[in-house]
Every structure is written in structure tokens, then in C-alpha cells.
Length: 79
Picture (cartoon, one colour):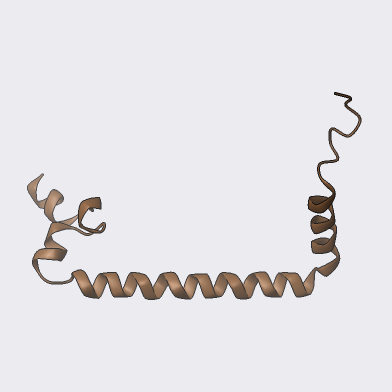
């Protein structure tokens, strides 16, 4: 159990690292790598959204119009 706790179990209080990562000085390298991965994932997502918008402008416009006009499912219900 001690080996698992120190080498495999991530701890929220130490930035979701293992105690061994902190003890052996790997903290900054791991956090830097995580940040780099996060930023590249966000950038990739933004590119994907832009590509999807360019590919499907009619569908996007339809969804935006629906959002602007409010819900249509309950239009026939009277208060």
C-alpha cells in the first residue's frame, strides 16, 4: 500500500502529483508539460470549431437563430 500511495496515487493537495514526483523534483517538469498539453488542446479545439463553422455555416446559422428566437418546443402551451 505504501508504494502505491507514494508512487501511483495522485494527491489533489499537491497539484494532482504523486508524493514521489514532488520528492524527486519532477513537479515543475510535470506541471509544465501538463500546461503545454492543455494549451495545445485548447488551440486545437478552437481550430476545430473554426473549421466546423466554415464547413457548416447553414447549420450554425440555424442553431443561432433558434437560440435567438427562444424555445420552440413549448410554444403551443398557454400560461
